[in-house]
Image (cartoon, rainbow, N blue to C red; front, side, top):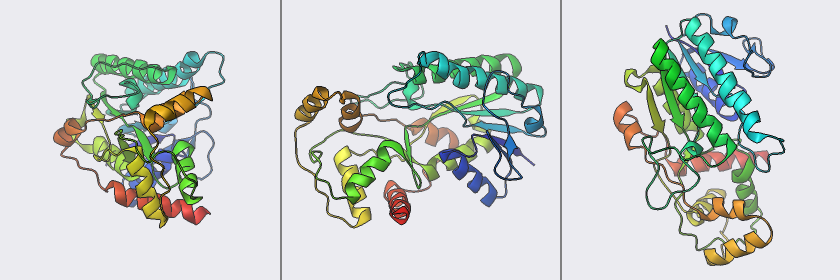
Length: 312
């Protein structure tokens, strides 16, 4: 019987993944920084010297979610070094120990940022030349390259998954801020935005990770993932409004004016996320794994909004 080690098990994706593994009767061990439950395995802060032998004992698959995640306005003196320490060094330390423990498959959750920050007409695929812009994306790319090299020399099956924005019950950061604005019925100058954004719901990402842990054709592949339903910022806000039962107050302000105003107040990065396009093509994922998103975007948004409103 397969046993899976899940790192970052207390995180946004990790918690949902562990709930799904438990519900499906799949044997797993959740690894966390500090144990809150008896069954959890505490590993402390991730580094290139973390000891994993006890956690890896008897495991066939590792799903590596733990990472130093992208944050706005990073305060580190050397962001790239900080990202490398966790996303590259700590990842490879775990992967090498996994090989020594007889683990067969290592699933690495990377990021669409390995591909780049923005698309223009052509969605990103797993076969495109990587073009990371920021230190986070660079660190994820370096980890991917090192894992493939380790796979080549050891036979460890490496599976790489590059998600775009992940949303679902409990989502934070910019997505939560959008829901707060919709809930408060704040008029927004986003009624005429014609971009395309790919996102993936928590349920769909978790479902794909479970498939990747089991499907023989997932070995040594890189997969893009999304809800397979790209929407503009305007459409997303209307869907959130509908899910809340509220009237959307979206003013049709031209994108160029928004970009200009954002630049004046030092918010160009925020404008890029709201107005720019970022699409991923999941054709390869669907074909190679015979996988389809488990839920629709509309269903997932309704679930996400319901959880958000229940908190308020």
